Amino acid sequence: MLASAGIGSRRACEELIEQGRVSVDGKVVQVQGKRVDPLTAVIHVDGQRVIVDDRMVYMAFNKPTGVITAMSDDKGRLNIGDYVQDRETRVFHVGRLDTESEGLLLLTNDGALAHRLTHPSYGVLKTYLAEVPGPMNSDVKKRLLEGVELEDGFVKVDNFRVVDNLPGKLLVEVVIHEGRKHVVRRLLEEVGHPVSRLVRTAIGPVQLAAIKPGKARHLSQAEIGQLHSQVGL
Picture 1 (cartoon, rainbow, N blue to C red):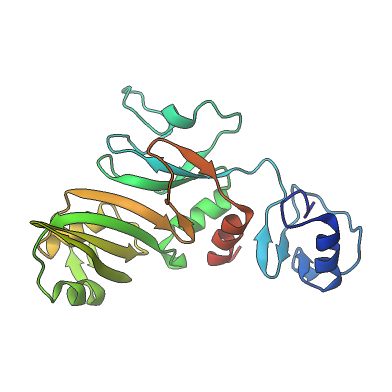
Picture 2 (cartoon, rainbow, N blue to C red):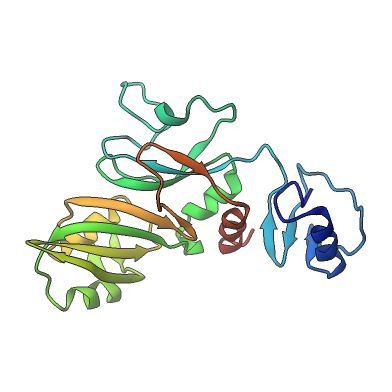
């Protein structure tokens, strides 16, 4: 099962077991040939979750601007389901992006992981690139890191930097674990820099990278394991 999950060759996986680096349901297993149920077993290698249930789907999707974050829409608006509805296994989106924002969304049928990824108490970082008017006062970064009072409460970013200085506008990177509605747009507008374009480029260890708008890719076993580790699964 480890070999079929892409952890390594059968011999390499046997060595991992011999070295005590594999656990099943919280207990280290060093006996070869142990039978486990792929539908229920919780397997970790070096403390990182390995998904061996082939019914589970984990994907990264690049949502284009103008697409609503929904798997279907009774008003006929363009939605995520229009791009992935031909899949045999039904998936759902993890979190949201507003219609005019674009970039990375995770799609899965793993409800436990999805719940934790969207809950702010687990602190999963999300990275955004925003195009805003320039120039920018030197105190903006300090204000965002220390926190800004919005109409629904106090919010602060985890990191902020100016990526590029263009004529009349700036490209800035915002890293935040909050998931409130339009939170990045509202934060930047509050400090005097309304957003003209917003792209989510990362969720935890998963990067948007070279995924083209409207396209999706399956996550690697390493990415899946890292996501589970970040939320304590």
